[in-house]
Image 1 (cartoon, rainbow, N blue to C red):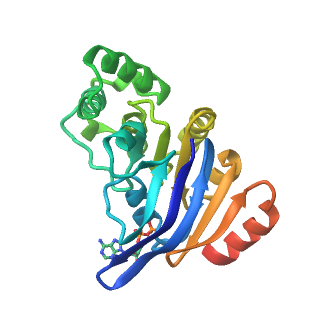
Image 2: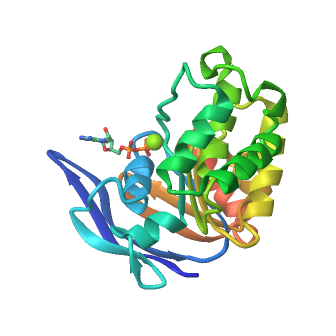
Image 3: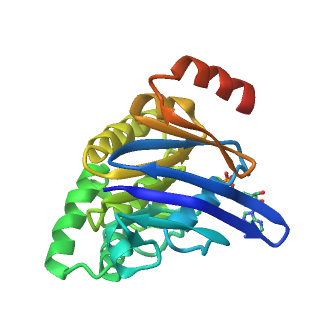
Length: 229
Ligand SMILES: Nc1ncnc2c1ncn2[C@@H]1O[C@H](COP(=O)(O)OP(=O)(O)O)[C@@H](O)[C@H]1O
Ligand SMILES: [Mg+2]
C-alpha cells in the first residue's frame, strides 16, 4: 500500500503548525523525529483523520483519510492517550474493539492475543488506574493493534517505557512493520536507529529531511545532536 501525504498544511489560529508537507510511505517502519513543538502530533492527528487539514490531501491507495474505509485500516496511539481508569486492561481493549466494529468472538480472541504480546496477560483483569506509565502505554499499543491495522500511527509510543519495555516494543514494531505502514514519532534517536527503515525529520512545521536511516546515519546523528540536544 502507498500512503500519500500531499502538501498538507495546518494553520491554527495564529500558528502555522504544519507547513505544506509531502511524503509517501509504504510498508515498513518510519520514524518521525523533531523537537517539541515541531508539528509531529498535528501531522499525525491529520493522518489519523481526527484533525482536518487547512489544505492538502492524505490517502492510502487512493482511499481518502476522511472515510470509513481508511479508518478500518488505521490503528492510532494518540500522544495524550485517554485512559479509562476504572476499566481493566481487557475491558478497555474489548471496548475499543467494539468501537471499531469488530465482531465479539473475534475481538475476544484478538484481545487476549494482544495482551499477551504486550506482556499484560497476567494483569489483564486489573484496573488501568493501578498500572505504571509503561503498562498504560502498553495498553495503548494493544488497543491500536486490535483491528489488525495496515496503517499504524504511534505518537511517542516509547514515552514512559523502561529500557526492557522499550526493547520489547522495538521487536514488536519491527515485526509488525514487515507488512504494515508504521509511522512513529519519538525524541529518542536510538528508537529510530534500531527499528526504523526510514526517517522523517520536522522542524517548525516543515519537513527538513526524508530518507533511509542507514544511508545517512552518520550525518543524521550529528544533525540530530546539534538540533535537539
Ligand atoms: N490546538 C492548537 N491550537 C493552537 N496551536 C496549537 C494547537 N495544537 C498545537 N499547537 C501548536 O502547534 C505547534 C506544533 O505542535 P505539535 O503538533 O503538538 O508539535 P509536536 O508534537 O512536534 O510537539 C506548537 O507550536 C503548538 O503549540
Ligand atoms: Mg507531540
